Amino acid sequence: MAETIIKIDLNKSAYENDKIHNRWHPDIPLVATVKPGDDFIVECYDWTGGQIKNDDNADDVRDVDLSQVHFLSGPIGVEGAEPGDLLEVDILDIGTFEESQWGFNGFFSKQNGGGFLTEHFPDAQKSIWDFNGMFTKSRHIPNVEFAGLIHPGLIGCLPSKELLDTWNTREAGLVATDPERVPELATLPNGETAHMGQMRGDEAKAAAAEGA
Image (cartoon, rainbow, N blue to C red; front, side, top):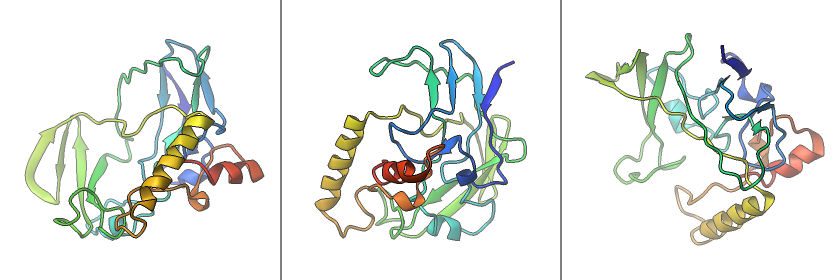
C-alpha cells in the first residue's frame, strides 16, 4: 500500500499547512524525501486554495485573489538526485476526495486575471462539474456529459537561484513594456500573500519577496 506523504484538510486554509507552498523558490524546505522507484500518495488543494465554491454565483471567480495561486504540495526530494538531473515522474492514478466530488470551469473577468478572449468574454462566469467515475456533468450546462481524464494542473521542480533571477528579470521587463495593461502581462513577486511552506521569519520574508 502506497504511503500518503502529504495530507491536507479541505476544511482548513492552505496557509495552515506547512507542507503546502504557493511560490517557486529554491530555498523552500523539502517536506518529504522519496527513493527512485517509490510509489506514494500526495494530497493537494485546488490551485486557488479553495477560493471557488460549489454554488451558482460567479462572484468568487470575479473576486478571486490570483496573487495567492498556485498552491502546491511539497517540495518532495528524490534521494540521490542532483541539480540538472532529468526526473521521470509517473502519475499512476489521480482523483478527487470522497467528500469533494466536483470541479469548476471559470472565465476570469477582464479586470482580474482575464484571458486570451477577454474582448469576447469580459465578465466572470463559472460552471460546476460533478464527477461520477470517469464521467462529469454540470447543472450549469444541461444535457452535457462527457468522459475525461483528470490532470494534475501544475507540477514542476524548484528553480535554482540563477533561474529564478532570470524569470523575474524577464517578467519585469515584459510588464514594463505595458505597465497599465488590463489584464496585466505577467504577475510579479508578491510577498504579502506568499506561503513559503516551512520557512519562517526573516528568511521567509526575503524569499517571499522574490519567489515566482
